[in-house]
Amino acid sequence: MIFEILKNQIEKSRRYISSIGINAIFISLVIYVRYSLYCLLNDHTLGKEYIFFYTVLSLSLVQTLATTRIPLFCKELKKGTLVKYYKYPISLYKQFVYEEIGESFFSLVGISLFIIAVLVALSVQQNILYSILFICAVLLSELLAIMISILLFSLSFIFMSEKCSKALLTCISDLLSGSMIPLLMLPKWFERFCYYTPFPYLIDAPISILLNKAPALNILVLQFIWIIILYIAGTIVLNLVTKRVTIYGG
Image (tube, rainbow, N blue to C red):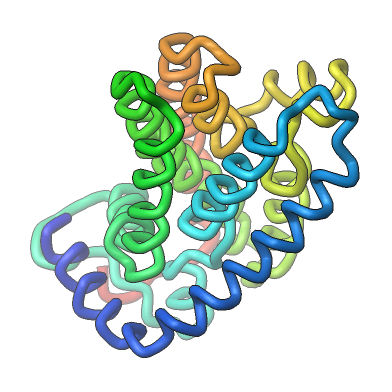
């Protein structure tokens, strides 16, 4: 089942090869603008090197996270083509998770930007251990983003529209994850508040590991805990909301 979905995602990614150059130019421009803005806002407690690495890594991560795109199941739900079973019987929730894993890890953008993150990780730290822990945190952040995305977008089964979920998720994620601005540049009380939610573990926490601003093992454990909590919550919510619709063909 999962291999069929991943194979489909790899085949689909080949259609976007021609857009690599355009994406590279756009990303470089955004990095320059954000880096300049962060330097202006910085109160000189953070070095320019830290701000540069944070900018590159945050943009690389946010482009691959499930919180930045509408899940495939929302589009299928709108078209009325949602399929519950592919080749083997599987729960609807697991199907959604596998599809998003394929989209996050095996899309052309996901692969290229993940390579950027790995190269930056290797250039930042002389200690290879921090780079390895950072990569582990990135993988967990991708899974965490999938759980968050499916949980909120499950509301589409009730309202038959993903616009509200998309707006809510984008707003909260940008504000609390560190993708809009590094959390270390914000008031301490707000940074502490953010870390009571799962969102900083998408972007700010993995980067903090690499730049040696936070204990790595604590972050990895908390990421894993949030993944379990949201996986259970997502399963419950999806089972409740799908009782309100009829899915043909499965």
